[in-house]
Image (cartoon, rainbow, N blue to C red):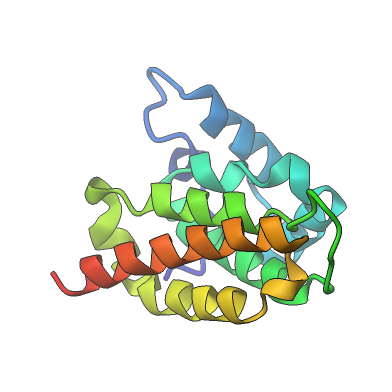
Length: 152
């Protein structure tokens, strides 16, 4: 994927009628290097997690390593309601892989599949039993979607 910092147009895909969620993602992550974005995300992952769902495709592809780093670095938790945003991040990734973005995101499929494998094999890091089931379901659904995309 591209190693150049995403521009505002990579976040806000229709500036004539801007999506406020995309604008918010730009305000939170625009102009940040990957290391800076990791620091920002770690400050308050719950606050920033939806930004990955709404940022434009090019920005998402650039910042995906932040998600990967976060989910691989969180400590094991068995606390209710603390899945380290693993469930919503899977949902956000799935939203990014919409039909009109597939050409640009197809190169990211192996990395996302690798992360999905990691998450589903390390569920004890992601909340209590109920949270872990929900996380597993979301990442399994994402894996199935990506397998379908990869086979076409």
